[in-house]
Structures are given as structure tokens and as C-alpha cells.
View (cartoon, rainbow over the protein chains, first blue to last red):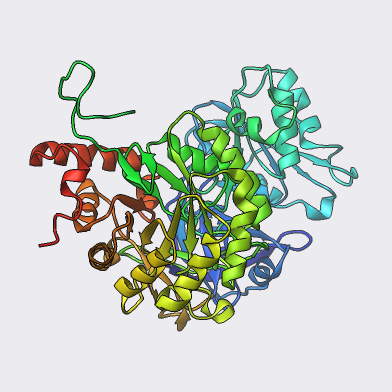
Length: 249
Length: 321
């Protein structure tokens, strides 16, 4: 603790995540619930919310999309990051057979959920999607955990051509999952919500938003009357899709 | 709910918490302070439904502003420090949100307060004009943001003359209930209050964040906020805010929204005894969110019963001895 605000960690190892992304393992733990996030500061650059990819040791996965994430992706062993949190409400896990659906950098919000749920004796399957194979992230982490992964890419370079919502269709038809947990681009989560509407499958969605405070004061991350940082980032699907999906009732 | 001290049958109904803020009736004295929870209709209405007497939107200017890059809002151990930098979507978009907020608050009796700022007195007036279609209950003029000195210059709230110029400019285009938000940093806050009231303010919000302050990270060896400095709020500044309210209440005869570090019913009562009519609630949302409104109202109600106080009117300014 080097100020009242941040805990400083050093990068222990760095792993390239396909095209333009990286996973960083840090030199300490941070007890977090699956789905919670941290605010990460690089002095002189910026501070942004990032998912807790793993909590022991604290690990972060970043997709290079702007100045801050670019700098994060270029960190090397021994470099420092400043972390505050964890913040927010994570996933409410009650089901026995869990289907996880991730897209883009949102996949990093699902890895800790997967590992913790396996530890608790639950069954987990995962569908991961991206535009093209070179943009898929974190498949290795699910392989490491021994979790079967269904891949979907828009161009068919890996797995099925199409979306993750198409890829999970056989599992849904077979009645496999007790609940669905997702994080990814909002169009993906809206499509998932539409597919599951009318079924009794609980759907939990985790959102990524720009934030200033991270603890429910500034209002920057609002979604309707909800604050993503404080009430979320995980929400019951129905509750937020009412706001997001123009076709929802 | 309406809470008068006598029902139709004449039975004792408990302490009267409702107040009159510049002609606008508030069901209780608690006001969501500007900047907390932004300007989105959904969040403003949620704070209102949770029990705020009034809700204030985040300050807006004519044109949109991005504000400062992160870090911008931090918990430093005894409250918050922030340098958001007046980020806002611009008055046109703000007006749409306020209209939606007004609609969502319809029938709740919760008052809606818009907040504006500008680089010049004329810019303040233009921003107010742009918000007129929203028909808000009150307009608050924010002349006291401490975080934009580099761009906007010395805050108007520090000196009686400039503070009055902004008030006059807004008064010339807006005839509704007008609050001006003063700064606890003004060396002579009572003089600023007098000149603003003479210029036409119907009420005063006292005050904004204190400072600016600074937090330095020892390992980074630099200030944490990207703006280097930011306004300090929360329990640490409460005694200063109470003193400001006290001095202003002694100087002018308009209602005051006492704002700064209030977290409990006792804190709120202290502000009222110093002379406040209403009480701003801001940083207190960091811990419990909107439930803070219900809790503070209950605590205030209990305290009034314990101390035998039937109405807040009874104790307003009573500490002026």
C-alpha cells in the first residue's frame, strides 16, 4: 500500500493473447468474487476498469484498443501497475451446469467464474466468439482448467462460422445448462437475451463500461437507472435487457 | 409522504420534515448534490424514489465537455477527492435527460434541480435558456467548481463582483427559483452571499468541494489525479461547511442548501441549526448508495422526537447565539 488509494503490483509474467492482447500475471493476490473488477492506474497514462481474470495470483487480460490498453499490453516482467478494488457485484452462482458465453475482452470476466465453479464441484462449458481466429482470447485458460470450449468466429477461421449464440444452440436444445453467464459486446448479449426469452433459463450478463470512480458516485457508467460499477457489473438479464434491447417488452 | 404535524383528526403525526426551498416545497430537507450520479434521468429518478426531497443534476454547459482523464474520483480515507472537470453532454442533451427525469419523477413530489456553468456570465445565461424547456423546479448556478481553473480561470464564487455578474446575467433570462452555489474557499463568503442575493438569487447552496487538495502516490512519486489537484468532500470538510452556512445565514435572508460531509441525521440537524433550510447529500452515497436518503430522514425524525422538536422551522438557525 503506497497511498491510501492503490496497491502496487509487479508483473511476474506476460502472455501474448493472439492479435493485440496480453494477459499479465501479477506478484500478489486480490480476493475477488468472480465477475468483480478493479481500477488499474498507469501513472502518466490513465486509469481504467479491468476484469479480474484470476485473483490468486491477481491476473489481468487486456485487449489493445487505446492508449491505456496499449501501454498495459506492452508491460514487461518487473513493471508496476497500481490497482484499487475489487468493486461491484459479481455472478450469483447457484446452478449445477453452467454455460458461459464470452466475446472479445469480455471473456476475461468469465475465467475466474469458471475456475471457482469447478472448485465448487459444478459443471462448466464455454462458448467463445470473435470476428476472426486471431482475435480470440483466453482459450488456453479454459483448456488449462479442462473445460470444453465451443468456438465461433464470424469468418469461420476457428470453430463454427457464426456467433456464439449459434454455437450454443445444440446445448440449449439438449437442455444441458441450468443457467447462462455471459460477457461480451452488447449486441452479443442482446442476441443471447432474445434467444433465451421465453425459456426459464436464468441469464446473467456482465457489462463493460467506461467509469470514473468505480464505486457508485459519479454516475458515468449508468445503464437506465442502474450503475454498472455498483449494482453490476453483473445483472440479471431481464433487468437490463429491458433498457438495452429495443425489441424487449 | 406528506408529513404535517397534525392530521385531520388532530392526532400527533410526528415531526414535520417538509421545508420550503425558495417557494418549492420539499417533502424532506435532503437534496442529492450536483455531480453525484450524473444527469441521467434514470439515476436522478432513482435517487428521488429512494427518498431524496430534491435531486440536482450534474452541471452542464452549452457545449459538451469531456472533462479530465482518469484518475478523476478517489476515496482517500476520509472522504473523496475529485477532478472530474465538469464533463457533461451539453445543454441540449442535458435538457432531454431533465425532461425525462421530470416525467419519471411525476407524482412523487420530488423536486428537480438543474445545474449550469459557463466561462462567462453570458454563457451561464445561455445554458439556463437552453434548459428552459425542461421546466425544472429550480436552477442552481455553479460558480464554484475548483477543478477547472486552468481552463476557466478563477472561480466566480471567490469574489463578490464576479459572483454577482453571473447571478444578474442568469436572473435577466430566468424568473423561476434560482440558487447560486457558493464556494467554501471564498475568503469572505458572507460578502459573496450578500452580493449574490442583491443580484437576485432566491437561495444559496453552501457550498461546493473544498480545496483544491492533492494526493501523492509515494511509489509513483506524483499526484494521483490526472489534474493533479481536485475538490475535497466528505466528513473531513463538514465543520468548514457548517461554519460557511453559519456565516452566510447571518448575512442574508434567503434559504440555504447546507452541503458538505453530511452523513447522518445529526449532521443534517447541525446544518439546519447553523441556518440551512435544506441539506445537500453527495459523497455519502459512496457507502450505501441511495439508501442514505431513507436512513438520514429516519435518523432526523428520531432525533427530533428525542429532542422534542416538532418542525425543522423551530430550530433553523437556532445556533446563532
